[in-house]
Length: 482
Image 1: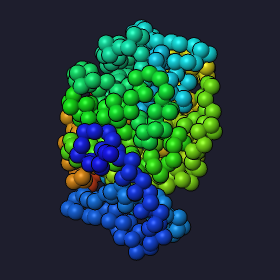
Image 2: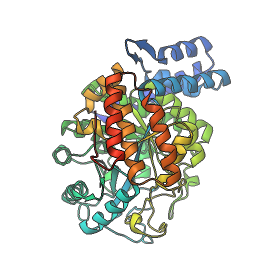
Image 3: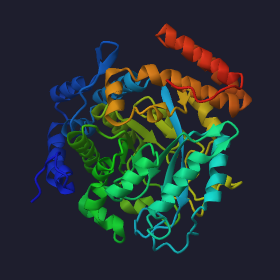
């Protein structure tokens, strides 16, 4: 029988079923223990230190107690502290990105995904390099600077060479004032050698959703194909880091299995990366299973309410305070709006989840990986964020300045990252406003930039940022960064 060990490289030991079950039992036994809950909440609270803040974070067991707790005033306090943490480390900035689907060819049999190999109804498509150029040009014309590329697992149609060539193509496209400055990659688990190739290609974050940490459930959800191998998939982040990739992104697909089990497993995975590699996940995503071609989420029987979903996000933020959190257009405008303050630091905007979708006049539905709930344009999303007093950011500076992995985390933990991120957000927002925004968004945005400039505490930094912003607005140079 496997023994729980966060430092092990064996999936059954660092994501240990017995430990999760014990954790859930402990959480049930203590969910009404007010003294313990207060102690955990106090531990999670950010503490002022010098010019920044420090957070202790929470263990998977401590966070599971909070997730199990239904005492209204304590749930409210969880949300309040999550907002404190978000403000301390990420401020009011929200980074924007878009997914780019390269190919929906796939050899796996995933029961929750319309791209599964058995689906004979969905049209199969793989973008050529010229088609990728057209898609990226369309994304640049929207104003995007950061992409997450997606492809099904198919060694014949989507080999690593195709992914690498596509990354090279994406980075090469300079259209008007547009450029994609960061390509994150969400492809199937692969080898250390292939991860090293992705690193050499200049990717940002390698993203791989676990879907489910419950081994038996995972294997039932993935009955055929390479993804059926639970250990190979679950240990992928270790291989990615061995291959030199500093930033990795975790996520489960809530709604497939019991959410409290998945929550504990997700945090155990983060603890494992910290224990083995000295740095936890760069991002955690929180997708929920959604309707798609031939996919009915109700058959899984584990759907979670918006209230529970929001509580999960708050508890993740308490547990892993320095990690970025992502919410996609799977969620509605209303849900996304409610969770931004609680911990979300990145959102997608103007997304299309079909292969070749950005060059289509109308949104195609027959090749979408999932229904897009928030179908607003990027300009609509930018304006909406500003209406809620957030700064839409297109910044990619940390990645290109080498502030990744433990270097990013050390700056984040010390509070020094704010000296880079706030002015960088304002400069990249100015680029968007100058080059792509509608008149209404432009007017609102420039007023926000002027207000936010005054919040930069260091006079020299504020002066340099203001100078660069004027240069951008006058149509001169782009891509300033601290």
